[in-house]
Length: 180
Image (cartoon, rainbow, N blue to C red):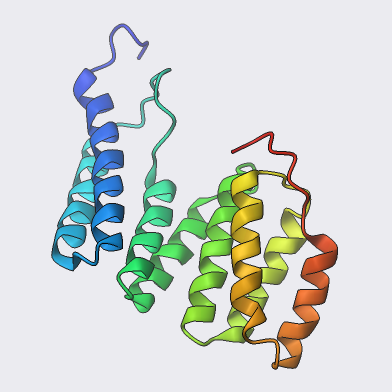
């Protein structure tokens, strides 16, 4: 369907999903669990109501992006088991062709594993992350990698974490700031 015959309700549903997700993030940051849960539920309903249509003025918002955002919302709410499931779904829904999105999803997944106290799982994801996108220079990826490193630093008494941090330092990309 071309842009001129595209049903605007389908475009609006995708946009509404994104907006409800943003509202859920804000409510989670404000520790408003019920409002965050409601907004997240509405985001899922809206995304399911939208067709896989593209609009030239909107960046794509798909199930993988919603899963990534949901994981972050659930982390803010302290619901780590649910966040883990959402982060795993986000990684599964991203393919290697979407290197930046996949890297961000893996960073979130590793972060959640650390917060849950599962350092071995966090390191496994971290090794996958470094093996698949060491040269990615997005400022957002680099900042989140730095946040992950800082989170792992508090566990450097654990030998595998120390070893990973050395590898991490060697592989950490420099930010070209070409992608945000």
